[in-house]
Image (cartoon, rainbow, N blue to C red; front, side, top):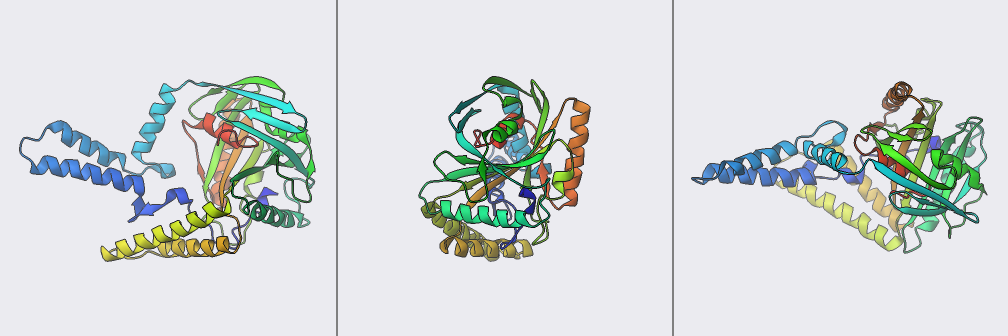
Length: 360
């Protein structure tokens, strides 16, 4: 069912986390300004110490962009964090009545529901209807003053592929879903039995008692044509592939405030760049129009959501895992999707993609 999510009615673009100020990401702008200030201070002041120049140059180097949209500074921080933290992470699963509680870098309590469909994609068109039903479901949750989190998982088991919906215990499932706790336990993988388990984090995968797991995150849908299914092709990249879509539905008051603030910020940046003599690009014009459309939809009652899409690849051997990861990345590129490899963040992403999102 996840495969039928489309980019309508808004054209999708870069995540809001990629927000830019005068053409660059905000933290890059701050680092560059500080670096230029230190270098300028060293050049203009007589007798300035050389370490001031070194710090200024280092700050400028940290602002250089690399692959995956990360800067040199972000990569350095990720490497330091990976080297200094423990590589072992405990995960605990408990069941109480119909509820499942997962402790993994956080705590999540949820109930599990199953959608009946044939294979990965239901070609009868029911997936489109179910996707619209979930969108209406999110709109209903948005009327609350609290943020609600739910997740949809396409889970591959040895006998079939199923779609699982994980909802907070106090939220009623939309029509077309029936409760099935076992499917959520299947989605937990090696944690599908009650008790404690340990995860060993490596630079680009996680090792559990049952094998190896690699988690990728989709961070850019902007190249997918409007109206086209976003994840349909990707789901066929590997027979041992799961897809998890996590959704945070913001409360109405916060959603209105954030939508208006985003339009104001983008509009102010456009004015600033125009006054500085920079030409407005087609991308910036489209981004501002998207934000304006989104603000109108939020005012009219549509939900403002934060979405994270994770692709989970499992294997018993490292060679097979690397082969499947390359296949997934190739399928994603052909589909117009951009994947984050998650180097140095595999344990965090593994916990974040679990049903209920305990790592959020």
